[in-house]
Length: 366
Ligand SMILES: NC(=O)c1ccc[n+]([C@@H]2O[C@H](COP(=O)([O-])OP(=O)(O)OC[C@H]3O[C@@H](n4cnc5c(N)ncnc54)[C@H](O)[C@@H]3O)[C@@H](O)[C@H]2O)c1
Image (cartoon, rainbow, N blue to C red; front, side):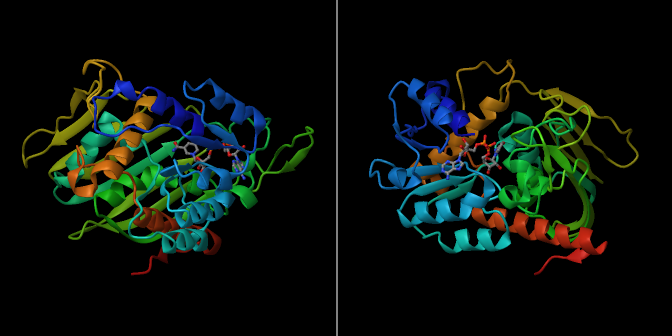
């Protein structure tokens, strides 16, 4: 993800000027090959295998923390103590105590946001606006999914994301959960309780020498939550899966309402489906081709396609916009996921672990 950011920064000219641009001043990675990759940047940054060197560099204003989950707490807190603004990758701490420790360390004067780029797809933005305008009437049900199948092959070698000591007890939820919760939380929906079923389907994978080692993370999670939009309670179904045969990073959000329904999936990234229903009138889904209708204007014509690197670029534009202009003077209103939103995801994931363990519905505090 560090290289994704460097690539986004390198094509900042893609965006209409927004009064702020990132320059990669310093990079830390403990892997020499990964670190060497950054030598190709036009203005080569300081390269180091010790993050303290990055934090000690006075030219560094903000830090992007994209490391294995067990390192989030230490590096984020050190970055904040060094006075750096922060964009931290999900899940913002390996577990709830780590997340709470990071949130406690945030001083008022620093901007901290959590990486979550999928809502920056034009379809995600359309859903965010539709939710903000509460075009649904009474909600019947909402569903959000993040599905891939990277782990379908049992011969795929182990890596840190498949070991709970580094990825966390949440397994696929820690990895993918912010993706499904970002827009429901931004809509202001409150999650009241959760019933979770977690699956550990592939329990061993080839280690560095080819011998099988434990793969002790949850591969798939299905959560049935009861949520409230402040007026009504409704079922919110959340799915995060690393073994979803046939899926390749498919992010889907769907809301069925008594007045309006909406459905967007990166499976068909150009297509937004909406339905406005008035009693007695036939039910007709409307399919809108979205094109490149991004939050921040870009050189790409509106008839062309939008993709993952574009969503990353747009998310970074939102972070830099908010950093440069403040929350009230952003060029467009959709800001990156907040630390408070990450804290709610941790409470949901923690409740989901307990729900699965006890085969019970777990209420969320407050
Ligand atoms: N937003 C997204 O869509 C998205 C996608 C994938 C991963 N992520 C998140 O990004 C973070 C990193 O995931 P990734 O897929 O980039 O993992 P990765 O394994 O590809 O990269 C992690 C990097 O951290 C480096 N590293 C390990 N220990 C370090 C240390 N002590 N100091 C400095 N560098 C160290 C590794 O060498 C590696 O290059 C995680 O929080 C993950 O959940 C987000």
